[in-house]
Length: 262
Length: 286
Image (cartoon, rainbow over all chains, first blue to last red; front, side):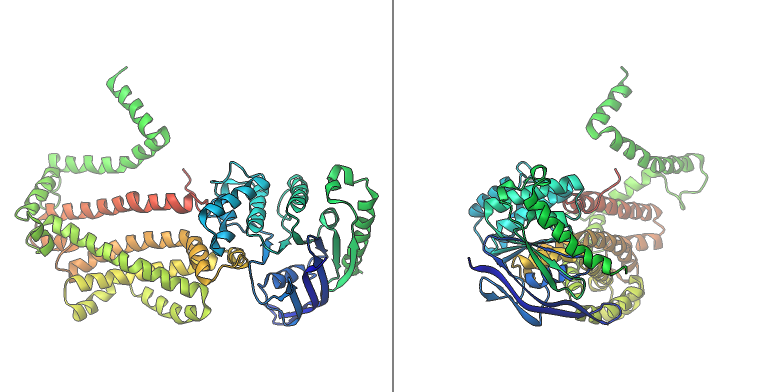
């Protein structure tokens, strides 16, 4: 299978906003995500996960190393990479339907086709009946579904997700994780999902990339060999194919966290 | 059921209980003022040269309207004619200042809000201009433009433009970065970000700017018309006072206040309701 997203020797430095000191955020990161693969990036806070995502999205310029999507070097933001942000990034002044169709609108897709595509994704994320609502009328979970549908509807080559479920309550998070899995099956999207939550990474990822503390390095890669269709929380908790790699990831992440306190 | 009860229930149905209570409470101070005004006349506390009887205000409308029939007289803005001319004159200036001030204030405010360089260039002059209250420009404006339209418009624009500029600037700066980033990652260009993110995102602030600029502008205009105008409500009041036509002064003051309330209630508040309130960006306690 061809790799859709290839990162090679990526390093990043930036001056601290207040002190002006040089911050070494990423150190020679190399990884690749294959077509249709769901990859998760896990690491302690401040390991450069969000920096990585911003570089991949093209929001931050990178000086060292290369980032390629579909064989093309990334040189700025573009519709080939869709991003689901941590905060609620859907626009408050647009209805659910107009938010979801926003990417297509920017791409200049004709209204009739756009409306059809929007409806498809409204249904996919379970927002039917809420098309004409404004974001402030939605719950936190519904807002993130809307954000997810907006990104999917623009049909990006790679979908980048930056801790999208961090701000919702625990029950909603479980539902959203299962739904994202269902959507990943339905759309076969290539996904890079960033999280600090080990359970979430192991539940969703085909492969998990574990990052070290700053400067963020790729410390290890762990594969989770559970078929997508079997990824349902109530079944998975006693499944060794899930718990073993999850414990392994947990151990790797804890090493990074507890180093700090010694 | 008494007529009064029936009327009360009818009104409640028409406006809703909460709203009706609000309207009634808001009317109390006005009612007190009116009663005291009427009592002043009947009890002969202060003579009519200071406070004219309520009835004479109506007569003033009539005398002021005399001899200014026809569109020609209205358009010519001769100050001998016309109550309507004065109203239209003041309104026209406010309208014109908004037509010029809103787009230019928003345009430059957005530019300064998104570009550090523009902000550095425009902010100091903005603070400088804002420090000089509208009325302080009047003597200079009279020297430059004489009395009349240009002077009054200049004073108004000075108030309107900078308020809208600053409010837009602050509004754009307050738009969460993530909205801009999300539109950029969808492939949106600068123009898309300006029209789809910055302007709607800054709208709560822009609407506040427009409301403030209308409030302050209206006051500055009346003052400017008194000294540097040749028409308008401010001018009318000034001339009437000089001629000891106290009822015309009263009428002018009332009209100024009523016109402001109408613009605020009928134009600005509905505008707010249909945009930023609908989007959940601000809310009203009621």
